[in-house]
Length: 583
Ligand code: ADP
Ligand code: MG
Image 1: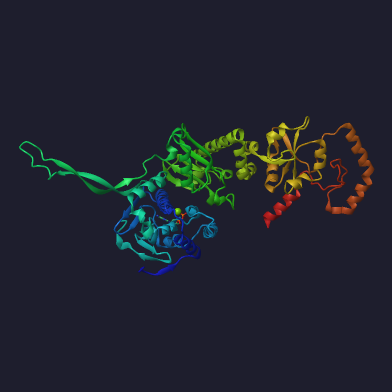
Image 2: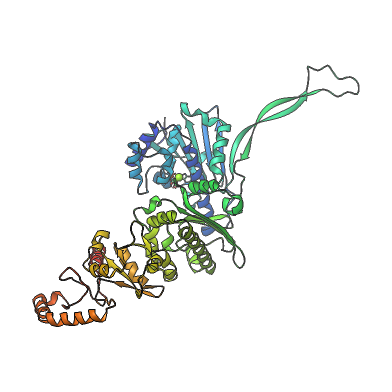
């Protein structure tokens, strides 16, 4: 009975559909959250397009939800950006996002939870949890749409797209209307009471009005015929008769959370906002909510996730993994701008709402904006304060922060000259005395020996390799603590630290290591050098160009000889790393 040409779903979509249609998963509510969030995204996109690509401000946007008990349909409509014919095909027939294949696999084997569907860019298909037929009417806001409305429709096996411009659904406006033909076992979603509960839950943090066509009981006053007729001068007795009426009811009346005073927001509200807005399933590790007034004005709400965001697990700087939402006077602008926070804070999630930026901000304008530079500085400051607070008052939490995000800070140390010095106090390394916990540079300095004026480190592939480096023999003998740089990032980072609190960082594996010597030790070295001079010359002759020089030294205790790099040379680990980067 489906009209028009039938198209096949891409194989991955087919698999998602099979799983959803046959799902025994009992909590089907998620479909509403997904469709509402798509509708809100579409409104955001239209607002942004209207600001950047046309000069007329967009009409006010909203979402409307309507159930029809006779037709057994539930309709979700928005006047957002809409979709072109090609976009319907692209968005509702294929899966673009990477990582989805994995989700499908886990879902199939019962490891993943259907309610996570939204995180994997396939939220739309959750409509089939409750519907055996889905129709999507859409008219795009873009000029290329030529004013046409298209109807996408599917019962789950394949889909069709036909011209539905006659339906006169959207008038001059653009938008999308999704009609769900509810399955037998999903009739509960026709009930406005149930819908109202769900919408209140899912829509609290959505900045567009969400209206439900809500059934209400109204009482009409009508003459009471059962009463005796009124006497002279008396009024006719009246009675109340209930009548059910429908009206559009706004479900989300609260101010956006970041506009509220931090004192009146509790932690479960923050968590709920964090989860719904950033499609996260963990609790935030930290919440930083503040307001800046004066020369520039903005509000910000920033979260550090307690587990690394999914999009960043494969590529720590993936642009997809950015999620700082920029608003200008409550209008959502973009959540992928690179300039809102530095690269080494890619993992934070949050909202910045500015009063000063122009509404039609394009990327180029933003990049040059002085206001944005100030906002960025203030946000970084607050986030660093939050992390400092963890560092000083909650070591366990700080440790888990460092385990997840330490590598970002190490990169920041290397590439961000503005924050290089600040980031040093957060860095943690393993060391010969760190035991089970990594050590900070401050702690290292606190343990320094009398007269020690340098911070020593050794490189190696792993703690064990660092520990048994021949150069460690002497350090152990002299009881100096040595930091272990166990991955290439550690080493790059150590080069960029250079010094801390006036103490130079020194690689014990490089030439030029001058530990303090007693008179006796100096004399001993002099004598040994004389004694083995001929051997050294002979060795150099044998090894030729393979070594720079052969030197008698006192840096070893038990081992007879070791290879060291020149003071400015690269360690073997670094050389291997550089090689692997260029191939
Ligand atoms: P995601 O929202 O994570 O991208 P979905 O499966 O929920 O994944 O939606 C797929 C795509 O379909 C969206 O990215 C969007 O381009 C398009 N889409 C879905 N619903 C709407 C809508 N109401 N209006 C416009 N586009 C929509
Ligand atoms: Mg979605």
